[in-house]
Length: 255
Image 1 (cartoon, rainbow, N blue to C red):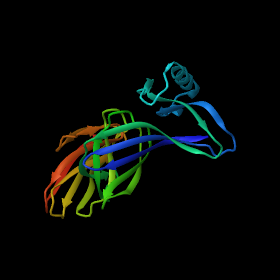
Image 2: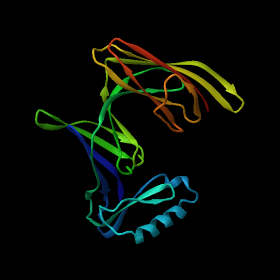
Image 3: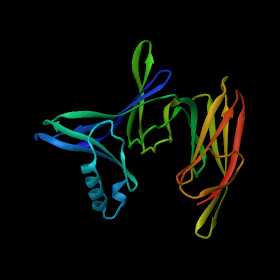
Image 4: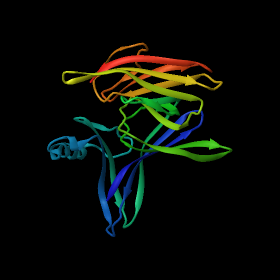
């Protein structure tokens, strides 16, 4: 038996998200009345992981089954208890467990790295998550000429409730981005970086751009534009770039 999370996102004037658990039985064995649980988190980081799994099983036994049940938080994990299921030999089933309808923003995303260089910018949509979303694959659909068309899919990591989920739709050919490492030096057990990122708009429309720089640890020290989000992995800035305009931000951090 194998399983995982998969999502279908439909874009109209709002974003309609459906989440499914995919159960795949590649064997000739029938599984009857077995309990389906989805654990969102990295259980293998715990030593031994059996300790966490015992807590998960104990919680699942006490939790009423049903799609409407909210996920249960256990340590750093979330448990979805999806009830009982029968799976026939060589059968694949999709079990719905998340539905969300929300407004979204269209923006552009530039991803930057500590080694510098130029990278493409992508048109993205951004929306706030109403529930915990386990890691999985998101299929993005859009209405075109009265037909629902799959326009792409991408992998997402575990997303926290109330966080911002950003999904790429395609490359934006009107924008150009560049990352320059102005200074890099060792300071004892850490490394200091000073970075300049430039975004240039060659098109005729104003663009809202999210700049995401992967710093892989540490925290920003100073900046010319206030970050909108910072994690251990990356820091994000947001700027507005008018037609035929070039904008830059400069910041530094130590890791």
